[in-house]
Image (cartoon, rainbow, N blue to C red):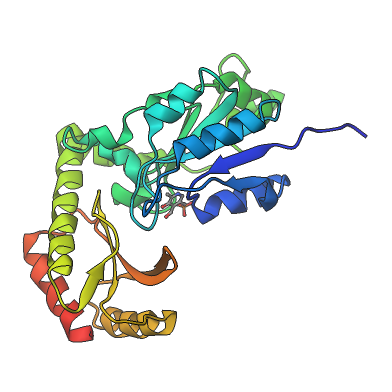
Length: 294
Ligand SMILES: Cc1ncc(COP(=O)(O)O)c(C=O)c1O
Protein backbone atom coordinates (compact mmCIF):
# COMPACT_ATOMS: atom_id res chain seq x y z
CA UNK A 1 0.00 0.00 0.00
CA UNK A 2 1.26 3.45 -0.89
CA UNK A 3 0.65 6.28 1.49
CA UNK A 4 -0.99 8.83 -0.81
CA UNK A 5 -1.00 12.29 0.77
CA UNK A 6 -4.52 13.56 1.25
CA UNK A 7 -5.24 16.42 -1.13
CA UNK A 8 -6.96 19.39 0.44
CA UNK A 9 -9.24 21.52 -1.68
CA UNK A 10 -9.90 24.98 -0.30
CA UNK A 11 -12.66 27.27 -1.39
CA UNK A 12 -14.96 29.95 0.00
CA UNK A 13 -18.24 29.36 -1.79
CA UNK A 14 -17.61 26.55 -4.28
CA UNK A 15 -20.17 25.65 -6.92
CA UNK A 16 -21.88 22.30 -6.32
CA UNK A 17 -20.05 20.87 -9.34
CA UNK A 18 -16.75 21.09 -7.43
CA UNK A 19 -18.13 18.62 -4.87
CA UNK A 20 -19.35 16.38 -7.68
CA UNK A 21 -15.93 16.50 -9.37
CA UNK A 22 -14.12 15.34 -6.21
CA UNK A 23 -16.56 12.47 -5.93
CA UNK A 24 -16.03 11.47 -9.57
CA UNK A 25 -12.25 11.67 -9.13
CA UNK A 26 -12.47 9.25 -6.23
CA UNK A 27 -10.83 11.64 -3.79
CA UNK A 28 -14.17 12.28 -2.10
CA UNK A 29 -16.26 15.26 -1.16
CA UNK A 30 -14.58 15.46 2.23
CA UNK A 31 -11.38 16.73 0.59
CA UNK A 32 -13.14 20.11 0.28
CA UNK A 33 -12.40 22.47 3.15
CA UNK A 34 -14.74 25.42 3.26
CA UNK A 35 -12.85 28.55 4.20
CA UNK A 36 -15.05 31.26 5.72
CA UNK A 37 -16.08 34.12 3.47
CA UNK A 38 -15.96 37.81 4.23
CA UNK A 39 -18.96 39.13 6.15
CA UNK A 40 -22.10 39.26 3.98
CA UNK A 41 -20.10 38.18 0.96
CA UNK A 42 -19.39 35.00 -0.99
CA UNK A 43 -15.77 36.08 -1.41
CA UNK A 44 -13.19 34.12 0.53
CA UNK A 45 -11.63 35.64 3.65
CA UNK A 46 -7.96 35.89 2.65
CA UNK A 47 -6.71 35.86 6.24
CA UNK A 48 -8.52 32.61 6.98
CA UNK A 49 -7.21 31.11 3.75
CA UNK A 50 -3.66 32.13 4.70
CA UNK A 51 -4.07 30.58 8.15
CA UNK A 52 -5.14 27.30 6.58
CA UNK A 53 -2.20 27.31 4.18
CA UNK A 54 0.23 28.02 7.05
CA UNK A 55 -1.18 25.16 9.10
CA UNK A 56 -1.11 22.74 6.17
CA UNK A 57 2.15 23.75 4.58
CA UNK A 58 3.24 20.21 3.78
CA UNK A 59 -0.13 19.04 2.38
CA UNK A 60 -0.90 19.18 -1.35
CA UNK A 61 -3.52 21.90 -1.71
CA UNK A 62 -5.76 23.15 -4.49
CA UNK A 63 -7.43 26.52 -4.08
CA UNK A 64 -10.64 26.78 -6.06
CA UNK A 65 -11.18 30.51 -6.38
CA UNK A 66 -14.44 31.97 -7.59
CA UNK A 67 -14.77 34.48 -10.37
CA UNK A 68 -18.50 34.77 -10.12
CA UNK A 69 -20.41 32.74 -7.53
CA UNK A 70 -23.74 31.31 -8.52
CA UNK A 71 -25.91 33.21 -6.01
CA UNK A 72 -24.52 36.72 -6.06
CA UNK A 73 -21.74 36.61 -8.70
CA UNK A 74 -19.20 37.51 -6.06
CA UNK A 75 -15.48 37.45 -6.83
CA UNK A 76 -12.59 36.27 -4.71
CA UNK A 77 -9.65 38.64 -4.49
CA UNK A 78 -7.61 36.87 -7.17
CA UNK A 79 -4.65 39.22 -6.81
CA UNK A 80 -4.35 38.46 -3.09
CA UNK A 81 -4.70 34.72 -3.73
CA UNK A 82 -2.14 34.96 -6.53
CA UNK A 83 0.29 36.68 -4.15
CA UNK A 84 -0.09 33.80 -1.70
CA UNK A 85 1.37 31.52 -4.37
CA UNK A 86 4.73 33.18 -3.75
CA UNK A 87 4.79 31.83 -0.20
CA UNK A 88 2.75 28.64 -0.30
CA UNK A 89 2.60 25.81 -2.75
CA UNK A 90 -0.85 25.21 -4.15
CA UNK A 91 -2.61 24.77 -7.45
CA UNK A 92 -4.88 27.70 -8.20
CA UNK A 93 -8.00 26.87 -10.15
CA UNK A 94 -10.33 29.74 -11.02
CA UNK A 95 -13.97 28.83 -11.56
CA UNK A 96 -14.88 31.61 -13.97
CA UNK A 97 -17.80 29.81 -15.60
CA UNK A 98 -19.96 32.89 -15.54
CA UNK A 99 -17.78 35.73 -14.32
CA UNK A 100 -14.87 35.15 -16.69
CA UNK A 101 -16.71 37.13 -19.33
CA UNK A 102 -16.30 40.27 -17.19
CA UNK A 103 -12.89 40.39 -18.89
CA UNK A 104 -14.64 41.37 -22.14
CA UNK A 105 -15.62 44.77 -20.72
CA UNK A 106 -13.25 47.54 -19.63
CA UNK A 107 -15.94 48.60 -17.13
CA UNK A 108 -16.10 45.22 -15.40
CA UNK A 109 -12.63 43.80 -16.09
CA UNK A 110 -11.36 44.81 -12.66
CA UNK A 111 -13.48 42.02 -11.14
CA UNK A 112 -11.23 39.35 -12.68
CA UNK A 113 -7.94 41.12 -12.03
CA UNK A 114 -5.40 38.51 -10.98
CA UNK A 115 -7.06 35.68 -12.95
CA UNK A 116 -3.74 35.27 -14.76
CA UNK A 117 -2.16 33.84 -11.58
CA UNK A 118 -4.26 30.72 -12.16
CA UNK A 119 -2.89 27.29 -12.98
CA UNK A 120 -6.21 26.46 -14.56
CA UNK A 121 -9.39 28.32 -15.45
CA UNK A 122 -12.81 27.12 -16.57
CA UNK A 123 -15.29 29.28 -18.50
CA UNK A 124 -18.64 28.25 -19.97
CA UNK A 125 -19.54 29.56 -23.42
CA UNK A 126 -22.97 27.94 -22.99
CA UNK A 127 -23.75 30.44 -20.30
CA UNK A 128 -23.05 34.01 -21.28
CA UNK A 129 -22.15 33.43 -24.92
CA UNK A 130 -25.61 31.97 -25.55
CA UNK A 131 -24.27 28.95 -27.45
CA UNK A 132 -25.89 25.51 -27.01
CA UNK A 133 -24.89 23.15 -24.21
CA UNK A 134 -22.20 21.88 -23.73
CA UNK A 135 -19.48 24.33 -24.56
CA UNK A 136 -17.13 24.68 -21.63
CA UNK A 137 -13.57 25.91 -22.04
CA UNK A 138 -10.60 25.03 -19.91
CA UNK A 139 -7.32 26.92 -19.87
CA UNK A 140 -4.19 25.49 -18.29
CA UNK A 141 -0.62 26.55 -17.66
CA UNK A 142 0.42 22.92 -17.49
CA UNK A 143 -0.34 21.40 -20.85
CA UNK A 144 2.37 18.77 -20.44
CA UNK A 145 0.78 17.52 -17.23
CA UNK A 146 -2.55 17.34 -19.02
CA UNK A 147 -0.97 15.21 -21.75
CA UNK A 148 0.58 12.91 -19.15
CA UNK A 149 -2.87 12.29 -17.67
CA UNK A 150 -5.04 12.09 -20.77
CA UNK A 151 -2.76 10.84 -23.55
CA UNK A 152 -4.42 8.21 -25.68
CA UNK A 153 -1.70 6.57 -27.71
CA UNK A 154 -2.69 4.31 -30.59
CA UNK A 155 -0.93 3.93 -33.90
CA UNK A 156 -4.19 4.18 -35.84
CA UNK A 157 -5.03 7.58 -34.31
CA UNK A 158 -1.79 9.12 -35.43
CA UNK A 159 -1.46 11.52 -32.49
CA UNK A 160 1.77 12.28 -30.73
CA UNK A 161 2.79 13.51 -27.33
CA UNK A 162 4.77 16.33 -28.91
CA UNK A 163 1.77 17.47 -30.87
CA UNK A 164 -1.24 16.38 -28.80
CA UNK A 165 -4.73 16.20 -30.23
CA UNK A 166 -7.82 16.92 -28.11
CA UNK A 167 -8.12 13.23 -27.27
CA UNK A 168 -4.69 13.52 -25.58
CA UNK A 169 -5.87 16.48 -23.52
CA UNK A 170 -9.38 15.67 -22.32
CA UNK A 171 -11.25 12.76 -20.74
CA UNK A 172 -13.20 12.02 -23.92
CA UNK A 173 -11.76 10.30 -26.95
CA UNK A 174 -14.37 10.77 -29.65
CA UNK A 175 -15.89 14.20 -29.40
CA UNK A 176 -17.93 16.37 -31.67
CA UNK A 177 -16.80 19.79 -32.83
CA UNK A 178 -17.92 21.56 -29.67
CA UNK A 179 -15.95 24.72 -30.33
CA UNK A 180 -17.81 25.51 -33.53
CA UNK A 181 -20.82 27.45 -32.12
CA UNK A 182 -18.54 29.51 -29.88
CA UNK A 183 -16.28 30.23 -32.85
CA UNK A 184 -19.29 31.39 -34.84
CA UNK A 185 -20.24 33.87 -32.13
CA UNK A 186 -16.73 35.27 -32.14
CA UNK A 187 -16.77 35.62 -35.93
CA UNK A 188 -20.25 37.13 -35.92
CA UNK A 189 -19.99 39.57 -33.02
CA UNK A 190 -16.27 39.92 -32.34
CA UNK A 191 -14.67 41.50 -29.31
CA UNK A 192 -17.01 44.48 -29.47
CA UNK A 193 -20.09 42.27 -29.67
CA UNK A 194 -19.06 40.32 -26.57
CA UNK A 195 -18.42 43.58 -24.74
CA UNK A 196 -21.88 44.91 -25.68
CA UNK A 197 -23.59 41.70 -24.59
CA UNK A 198 -21.89 41.76 -21.18
CA UNK A 199 -22.42 45.46 -20.56
CA UNK A 200 -26.05 45.42 -21.66
CA UNK A 201 -26.93 42.48 -19.40
CA UNK A 202 -25.11 43.98 -16.42
CA UNK A 203 -26.78 47.36 -16.89
CA UNK A 204 -30.22 45.71 -16.91
CA UNK A 205 -29.38 43.59 -13.84
CA UNK A 206 -28.32 46.75 -11.99
CA UNK A 207 -31.53 48.51 -12.98
CA UNK A 208 -33.63 45.59 -11.75
CA UNK A 209 -31.55 45.57 -8.54
CA UNK A 210 -32.39 49.27 -8.01
CA UNK A 211 -36.08 48.66 -8.58
CA UNK A 212 -36.05 45.80 -6.07
CA UNK A 213 -34.15 47.88 -3.56
CA UNK A 214 -36.80 50.60 -3.74
CA UNK A 215 -39.76 48.23 -3.63
CA UNK A 216 -41.92 47.35 -0.65
CA UNK A 217 -42.55 43.86 -2.05
CA UNK A 218 -39.00 42.60 -2.32
CA UNK A 219 -35.66 42.78 -0.55
CA UNK A 220 -32.31 42.87 -2.32
CA UNK A 221 -29.93 40.46 -0.60
CA UNK A 222 -26.66 41.50 -2.18
CA UNK A 223 -25.31 44.33 -4.32
CA UNK A 224 -25.57 43.56 -8.05
CA UNK A 225 -21.96 43.09 -9.12
CA UNK A 226 -22.55 41.61 -12.54
CA UNK A 227 -25.54 39.89 -14.12
CA UNK A 228 -27.44 38.22 -11.27
CA UNK A 229 -29.95 39.88 -8.97
CA UNK A 230 -30.33 37.94 -5.72
CA UNK A 231 -33.43 38.95 -3.80
CA UNK A 232 -36.28 37.72 -1.68
CA UNK A 233 -39.82 38.59 -0.63
CA UNK A 234 -40.08 41.46 1.83
CA UNK A 235 -41.76 39.48 4.60
CA UNK A 236 -40.84 38.91 8.21
CA UNK A 237 -40.59 35.15 7.77
CA UNK A 238 -39.63 33.62 4.43
CA UNK A 239 -39.75 29.88 3.82
CA UNK A 240 -38.53 27.83 0.87
CA UNK A 241 -42.18 26.88 0.28
CA UNK A 242 -43.13 30.56 -0.12
CA UNK A 243 -40.36 31.07 -2.66
CA UNK A 244 -41.38 27.90 -4.47
CA UNK A 245 -44.97 29.09 -4.71
CA UNK A 246 -43.94 32.57 -5.84
CA UNK A 247 -41.69 31.15 -8.57
CA UNK A 248 -44.36 28.68 -9.70
CA UNK A 249 -46.74 31.60 -10.33
CA UNK A 250 -44.04 33.80 -11.89
CA UNK A 251 -42.52 31.21 -14.19
CA UNK A 252 -45.88 29.83 -15.23
CA UNK A 253 -46.68 33.17 -16.88
CA UNK A 254 -44.02 32.33 -19.46
CA UNK A 255 -42.62 35.87 -19.57
CA UNK A 256 -39.57 35.35 -17.38
CA UNK A 257 -37.84 32.42 -15.75
CA UNK A 258 -36.16 32.80 -12.37
CA UNK A 259 -34.64 30.19 -10.08
CA UNK A 260 -34.70 29.54 -6.34
CA UNK A 261 -31.70 29.58 -4.05
CA UNK A 262 -30.68 29.98 -0.43
CA UNK A 263 -28.34 32.82 0.33
CA UNK A 264 -26.94 33.38 3.81
CA UNK A 265 -29.59 31.00 5.11
CA UNK A 266 -32.41 33.02 3.50
CA UNK A 267 -34.67 31.37 0.88
CA UNK A 268 -34.23 33.60 -2.16
CA UNK A 269 -34.65 34.15 -5.89
CA UNK A 270 -32.04 34.52 -8.63
CA UNK A 271 -32.74 36.63 -11.70
CA UNK A 272 -29.87 36.04 -14.12
CA UNK A 273 -29.45 38.19 -17.22
CA UNK A 274 -27.56 36.46 -19.99
CA UNK A 275 -29.59 36.57 -23.17
CA UNK A 276 -28.33 38.75 -26.00
CA UNK A 277 -31.89 39.79 -26.88
CA UNK A 278 -32.85 41.08 -23.43
CA UNK A 279 -33.27 44.83 -23.71
CA UNK A 280 -34.42 47.83 -21.72
CA UNK A 281 -38.06 47.30 -22.75
CA UNK A 282 -38.00 43.87 -21.11
CA UNK A 283 -37.46 45.40 -17.68
CA UNK A 284 -41.08 46.53 -17.67
CA UNK A 285 -42.26 43.03 -18.61
CA UNK A 286 -40.08 41.55 -15.85
CA UNK A 287 -41.32 44.05 -13.29
CA UNK A 288 -45.00 43.58 -14.17
CA UNK A 289 -44.59 39.81 -13.93
CA UNK A 290 -42.88 40.10 -10.52
CA UNK A 291 -45.54 42.40 -9.07
CA UNK A 292 -48.38 40.26 -10.44
CA UNK A 293 -46.88 37.19 -8.72
CA UNK A 294 -46.66 38.63 -5.19
C1 LIG B 1 -19.74 29.30 -10.97
C2 LIG B 1 -20.17 28.04 -11.66
N1 LIG B 1 -19.32 27.01 -11.71
C3 LIG B 1 -19.65 25.85 -12.31
C4 LIG B 1 -20.88 25.69 -12.89
C5 LIG B 1 -21.20 24.36 -13.57
O1 LIG B 1 -21.38 24.54 -14.90
P1 LIG B 1 -22.00 23.38 -15.81
O2 LIG B 1 -23.34 23.08 -15.24
O3 LIG B 1 -22.07 23.99 -17.13
O4 LIG B 1 -21.08 22.23 -15.72
C6 LIG B 1 -21.80 26.72 -12.84
C7 LIG B 1 -23.16 26.57 -13.41
O5 LIG B 1 -24.06 27.33 -13.15
C8 LIG B 1 -21.44 27.95 -12.22
O6 LIG B 1 -22.29 29.00 -12.17
